[in-house]
Length: 161
Image 1 (cartoon, rainbow, N blue to C red):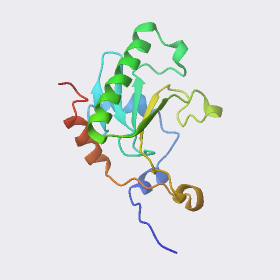
Image 2 (image 1 turned 45 degrees about the vertical axis):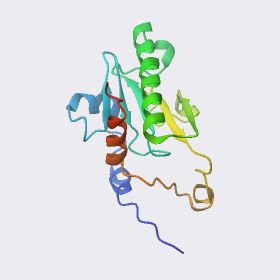
Image 3 (image 1 turned 60 degrees about the horizontal axis):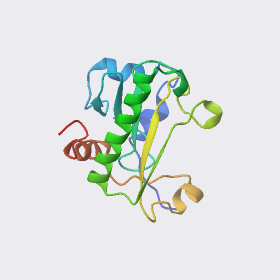
């Protein structure tokens, strides 16, 4: 059996998963690079997913702690869509994916890892990016560090041009 080292996962494995909401805590810390916050809007923000499905996987969340899209006021929902589009443009420029998955998991039964704070996912996809590792080994391979993905998206103009 081959061993694949993923030391960055240990922080998540050992972390207290009940300790607050990252979508409320991270923006309040004002440590954008360390928290992978790429862009701050008036009502919502863009950040890298710290446990991505693929490189460049971003999240768009409102500052308001709200469990579902239909509960947001129109201005916040509209800004979330504008930020989703901003993220897509930067991902296309930075990573040149063959496609994208865009969506929100609303509620725990829909797969939301943080069900109490609605957020959108934008996941870059490439031909052949899924292999046997997730199915057989229960392992997802992400070939680039979060810091490198952060820098790549910033260079692509996600924070403004």
